[in-house]
Length: 127
View 1 (tube, helix red, strand yellow):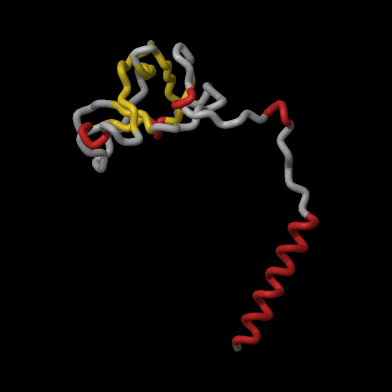
View 2 (cartoon, one colour):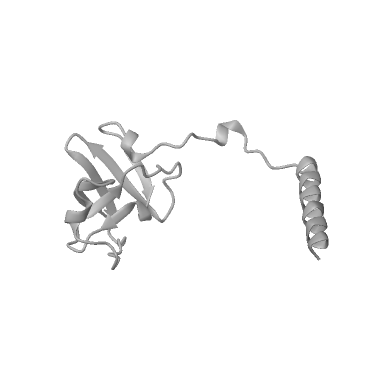
């Protein structure tokens, strides 16, 4: 039985290598590729868009950004948040119908301070 299992395993590896060698994977043209950047690399005055999951709401309603959150290249996403880095910190812009969910496992804001999270300085509601 062990011999049969080993043979099957060797055959599976062989076919995986053969298929990999003959596969033609799709390649994105270079002009459609951007290197990933994070919110921590934003310049003062720069505007960027991040995923909703990058903004965490504490029990008290304060908002924190996950440090190193990847900036989205497409600002048209309906699940994106607009962030502007100002000299006094990060400003978050919500559309009037956009909501952030306060999750039950997000603790008090005191737990966030000094961790891998940056408090949002100001929240703006856009029309």
